[in-house]
Structures are given as C-alpha cells and as structure tokens.
Amino acid sequence: MSNKTVTLTDNATGKTAEFPVREGTHGSPAIDIRSLPPETGYFTYDPGFASTASCSSDIAFINGDEGTLLYRGYPIEQLAEQSSFLEVSYLLLHGELPRKNELEAFEDSITNHTMVNESLKNFFHGFHYDAHPMAMLTGVVGSLSAFYHDTIDIHDPDNRMLSAHRIIAKMPTIAALAFKHIMGEPFVYPQNRLSYCGNLLNMLFARPTEEFQINPVAERALDQLLILHADHEQNASTSTVRLAGSTGTNPFAAISSGCAALWGPAHGGANEAVLNMLHEVGDVKNVPRYIEKAKDKNDPFRLMGFGHRVYKNYDPRATVIRKTCHDVLDELGMGDDPQLELAMRLEEIALADDYFVERKLYPNVDFYSGIIYRALGIPSEFFTVLFALGRTPGWIAQWMEMISDSEQRIGRPRQIYTGASKRNYMPLHRRG
Image 1 (cartoon, one colour):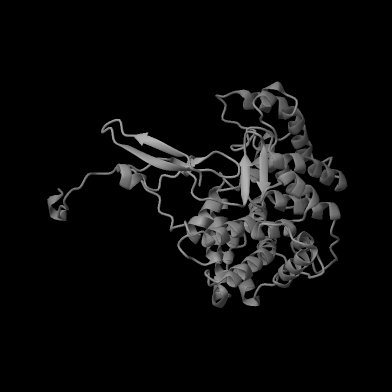
Image 2: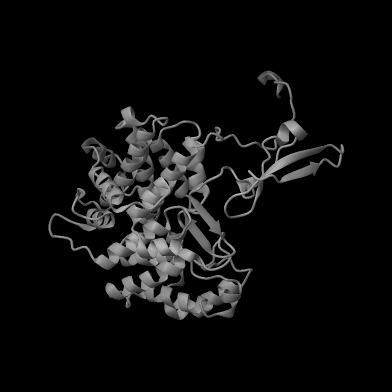
C-alpha cells in the first residue's frame, strides 16, 4: 500500500473522510473504500463491478489501451510462441516458470491423473443425446468432489495442489466424454504416451475401427489456443470462481461455477457467435452488403469477432493466433471451404477498410479460434467447452490465490433497495 490518500467531502454535511490508495505493479491505482460505510454512511454503486477492484492479484494483467496481456509478468505473445500449455499452467499455479525437472514432474503428475473413475462415465448415459456439452461439463466437474471428498481440505496446501492437478488433468477427459456422448460414439481412454493436446485430439476423434493420426500442426494450434485462454484477469467466470470459493466450498464446485458462468453467450460464446454470423452472411458475394450493414448504426447486424470490450487496440492474442489460423487452413487444405473462405474475406476487409481501422475493430482471438475449431472438425456448440478447458488453470490459480489471501472475505455485494417501503401484512379475506 502506498502512502497516498484521497479525501472525500460530503457536500451535504461538510464531513470529510480520508481513504488510503493502493497501487500495483501496473495499472490504475485504487481507493481502498472498506471503511467508507462506517466513516460516511454511504456505499458505492457500481453495476457489473466495472470500476471496482475486488482483490489484489499476482496472476494476470491487461492494458486494454496498449493491447497488453501478461501472465505472471510474461507477455502472452512470448508464451504462446515459445511455451506449452502445461508449462503455462505451472507458471500460473506457482508464479514462476519451471526448471526442466519441475516441468517433467508436473507433466508426469498431470498425465497420471487423466483417468476418471469408471462410474463417472455412467453419468453421461443419463444426459439426453442432444444435451448441450456445457451442461454436461458443468455437472460432471462439480460431481468430482464426490470422488475425492477425502482430499479437498481447502486449508491444506497439499490438498489444494492435488486438486489443481486433478482438475487440469481430467478436464480434457471429461470434455471428450461429453463430445463422444453427443456424437453417439464409444468413449476413448486417455493415452499416457501422448501430449496434453495430442491426447485431447485422440480422445475426441479416435474410433475403434481405425487408428487416428494426430496432425502436429493441429496439435500445436490447439495448445496455443489453450494458452491464449488460460487467464484474463477478473472476468465474469473468474470472478464467479472466486465468489463461490470465498464461501469455503470445495475447488470442484468452484470450478463448476466458473463453467456455468462461461456458458453464458455474453462471455464464452463469442467464438460460436462468429460461426453463426458467417452462416448468416452465407456467401462471399454477400460480404459487401453485410459490411455496409455493419457500418449502419441503425442496423442490428454486427460483425462478431471484431473489436474487444477490453482491448482498445489490437487483441494481443489475435496477433499470435492469426498466423496459426492460416497455417492450420493451409495444412488441412481447407482453402476451398466456403465458410472459411468467407471468414478470410471478412478478415481481409476489416484489416484494410478505413471504417474498421479507424475504430480499431480488428479481428480478435474469438474470430480466429472459431475458424480453427471449425477447421479441426469441432462443432460450434463445443467451442465453449474448449474455452473452459483452457481457462481451467487460470481459475485454479485464482482460487488458490484467493484462499491464501488473508484480506479476502466471503463475497457479499451491497445493493440500492428500490422496492416497497415497510408495510403490514393484510389477511387474505381483507384484500378484496
């Protein structure tokens, strides 16, 4: 905490109160208002908490004006280009990049926890054949606490780390089980010889009738996408994990709550919305008309996957994944796919048209991730599951940080009550 303070004056009474200012490594300082109610009798009003710092954190930092995203201080571009998802997961959990022996031990631990209890597979038979995969993921992740109830003491650091490893390891297996249930195909067991993303691809697409060949370009693209989604400060799902975790609930329940929040179309459904938009545009010849519709403020049509609420410049994650997207399309020979051809035409226009350039409406990570997932043969309703898989180490790291923070309390936002004033109960026979 800095030595700076801010003095607030109540114009009605003339009473003043002084509040300390907290400053971090990067970003705007924050006024510590915890003593505001007893000092002044007021609360603050901040719908959506967009102007409220709910915690201090060492994990991720975003500068939307400059287009910067850091994980534990490391630029996302460097991690996505040079690291691996499991190395980034270790970084988020431990705060530092691992040494060679530490990374090998971490990878071994994750590999050895990829199996799920056989009885858990029966859960999927209870879901309707066309159930949304996020419904299955949310429910099954929460159920893990029933299998590991003897090692979820949140006050035991060893229990916390064991739970972290289990969740990161089992998410791809659970995701693949949901996928196979939707497709009506046999479940595929994880293979210890494969990488994290190679294993996921194999569990998604392998069949008993033929051997599945993992494409290294697809494997690397998926690994990069998981890295790019691993954390993003106090977004809706991360805040939900922290809020649920603040009650002392077990980590599986907290992560399940994050899955539920991510399921919302305003949060995790953006890359699926990109594919829906491409479907609406329909054909390359329709692009000019839809570009004009996007420029018309009175037209409800919007180009999904362009611009970003946080990044007022280019999304740093899109800088990395754009090249990977083109590599995947070239490797898989998808250049003739009409919808992907349409996406590339929209990208070309958005990067050159003055209207989009001046407003900095550049393609974001959701635009490219949707295209890559489609090229890999993943149905659009499954995109958010992969988003959740990538975000899992960030959720876990945020939950662990929250549990260890002596300043954290159970979440309890305030409100401005606008209902009826106090009134007396009237018996039913007197109400007319």
